[in-house]
Image 1 (cartoon, rainbow, N blue to C red):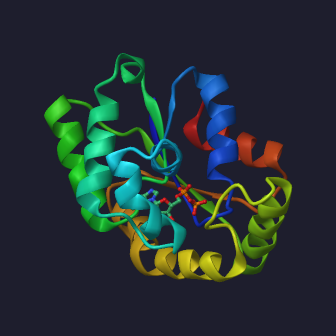
Image 2: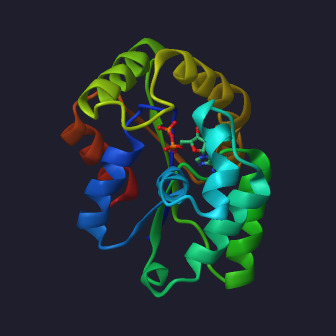
Length: 189
Ligand code: ADP
C-alpha cells in the first residue's frame, strides 16, 4: 500500500501515520522528521535547513525531492509506504510522479485530513506545551506562517490528486480512533 497523508499542520498526519504503520506494516516517511533529525545531528543538510524550518518556510523542492527519492529505494519501502508531509507543493507532486514512474510503482491513495484553522492552532500550541518546546516552529507566530504556506502551496494538491482519482477526504476533527476508522474504510481495508 502506497499512501500520502495530506493536511495542514496539526491535522493529525503524524498521529495517524504511526497507527497505520502498525496496521499495515509499512514505514512512515516524514520529511519533517527527517529534516528535524538532520538539524539535531547538525549534518550539512540540517545546517542548511534549520533557519528555513524554524521560520515556517518550505525547504527547497530539490532538497526534499532528493531525501524522498533516496528513502523510497530502501528495502523497507518495497511493500509500501506512508508519505507524511510530502509532497507539499505541486512541483514536489510532479517530481514524485516521475520518481514513482521511474521505479515502476504507483500510489494507491491520497488521504486528506481536514481540520479547522482554530482547532489547529489550539492543538499545536498544546503540542508545544506538552513537548516542552521541542519544536522551534511550534509557536503561534510560526504556526500562522505554516498555515498560510499550507493554504497557498499545499492545498492545491487536493485538486491535483482529485483529478487523478486518488483523493479521499476524512474529517480530522473527529477523535483519533474515528479518524483511523475513516481512513481504513476509505482504503477498503
Ligand atoms: P507540520 O507539523 O507543519 O505538518 P512537518 O513536521 O511535516 O510539519 O514539517 C516541519 C517543517 O519541515 C515544515 O514547516 C518545512 O519547513 C519543512 N518541511 C517538511 N516537509 C517539507 C517538504 N515536503 N517540503 C519543504 N519543506 C518541508
